[in-house]
Amino acid sequence: MESSTQGPQALGILAAFDFSACAQHGAKVASALATRLALPLTLLHIVDDEVVGLLDSVFDHGESVETAWGLCETAEITIREWAQAQQISARSEAQLAHPLEAILEAAEHAELLVLGRTGHLPAAAGVSAMALQCVRRASCDVLLVGDGLPQPALEARRVAVVAVDTIPNAPELVRRATRWLGASLAIDIVHVYRPPWRAADNEAGVPLADDERARLVAQQQRDLEQLVARALPSLPDKAAVSVHAIAAESVVGGLLRYVSARQPDLLVVGRRGRRRLRDVLLGTVAERLNSAAPCNVLTIGHLSPIEHD
Picture 1: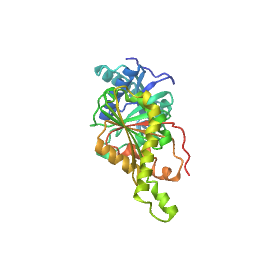
Picture 2 (picture 1 turned 60 degrees about the horizontal axis):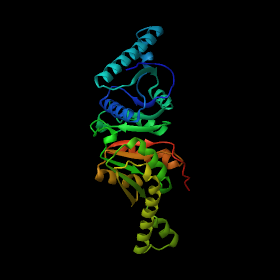
Picture 3 (picture 1 turned 180 degrees about the vertical axis):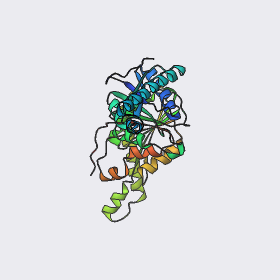
Picture 4 (picture 1 turned 90 degrees about the horizontal axis):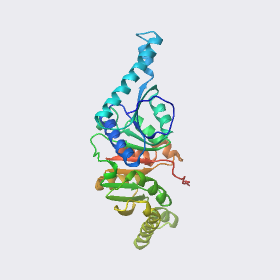
């Protein structure tokens, strides 16, 4: 395995590696993807540059910096030995830097960033702040992998749920997700929407009749099926694809209920950036799903913007 601390280059798949159990799982999933797609893989470890300040209380500053770089060299050797033992072909890289900023900078040259969901925190602690910041800010697609979750190679996944936040966005999200999905045996394309009759009720001043509500629900399903049909040629030939438009008072709540019942190996969500005050305060739907979903989550970034009223 090649070891390098060279400057920016086309990294292909970048796996942030902090030696935690979920980071090791993530590196294995990243390796399977890199092999299938013939992409280069880099395992990146960051030694927090704040360690220099801590060492300054014991050594003079020059010795502190030298010691910190020695930690980087040790980490790089350890990553290389671990990868060789796992039969993973990858570059190893260790940097002395601010962890979040260094990962985001490296991700600018990657097609996919793979991270452990919790880092060294216990699984019960939920998704780490570092992982959520990467979901929010990374310039590439992001896959969060959890310790203790099923870890088959992505090309052998049993069920994947693709969460479509807007119907016009469905073909783009499905096409872009397909590259990472591989030959999933089942792909559920799910759009959860707030009941359209709420606005109609408020505008008319009287509740819509049941048959009118049923008509609106059926129209949502037809619209989603028609647009998803455009993306079907890009899906794996053997995949069983189903399309579901579901009315729910909460988009996040509706998706989490579906995922809990379906128990997929992977949830795919799209990210287009925060454009509303609600998103700034609470996080986008993608961020909230990454925090709460009981499975690994793949976030597809830079989708075409959808304006909100």
